[in-house]
Image (cartoon, rainbow, N blue to C red; front, side, top):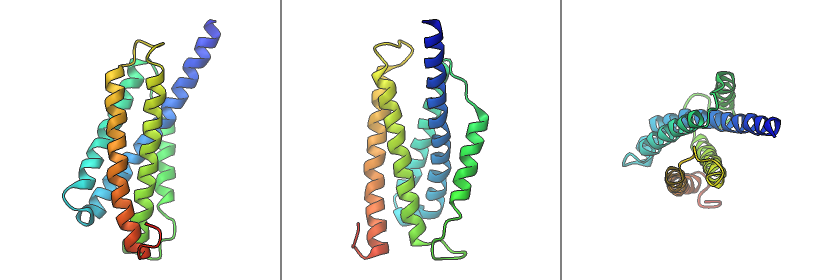
Length: 169
């Protein structure tokens, strides 16, 4: 039984560190979008989402600490390196920001947030067997993530309409 618990804890730590790498990438992407597309989005929309994403990453680190799972720095660095390499994708422009980049970045951020909500839900399902998890806090994080997804979808849809003339929005 002890070996099985040890394995489960190791797998939980691996799972959470994978999500932390994704959260770190999302923070970087959200901050970059707020900087490059904040004026386009208007009313501080992307700035608020970036701030929320930063808080959610911090909540994940706190949750990992409560569960006794260490942050693995190498995985964080690998995730950030992969995200930066991903920015090199063709976007139809050499130097200037492309409307295609806007759409792709909004879609990527939305997917990252959907993954984050899935992780919160997975942890929420463990509340009955792990008293270190805070049910109310997880419910708040899930609701916040859903709100972020809704707001990002409005922006993504608008960006896609602008890019594609309403064909796929």
